[in-house]
Length: 166
Ligand code: FES
Ligand code: FES
Image (cartoon, rainbow, N blue to C red; front, side, top):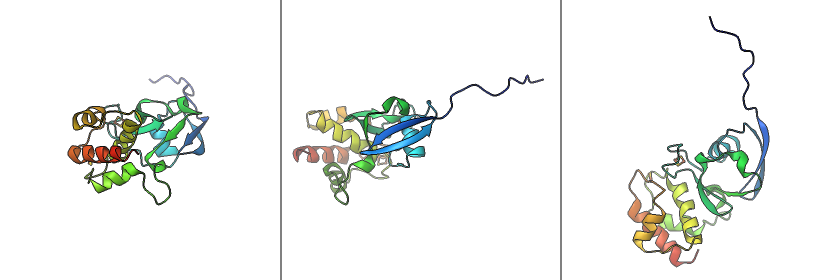
């Protein structure tokens, strides 16, 4: 016969304030909520994609203080006070970010599921001043998997954006 242990102890929702794409978001979430789930499920920003949810595909890549991270591997509560950038924050109104424009111009996607993560990773790659030959781009984008195999065009897009000094 099951024993009644009373109300379960465990995490309870707490107030967490995040700054995403320059806007303040006051959320009430459990401390165990990942940054990825906070973005998609609580901040109404579904552009960041969930692929593996275990740090192997890069679909959930966002920038935190300009640094690319897998948002599925970190808790939202750890990033209060940080500057979080998602794909929704790259364009300037109707004007695409040059990396977004380069992906369009070079057909750097097929289904598009990996694309937000690819683009944010590519923006960081340029900020990190990585070399822009094919092999280096492939190496420094290797955390971002594309199931459609659009790698050749992704590399072309990153190289083209890099030449524009974006
Ligand atoms: S969903 Fe985060 S790395 Fe795959
Ligand atoms: S474009 Fe489909 S997974 Fe990359």
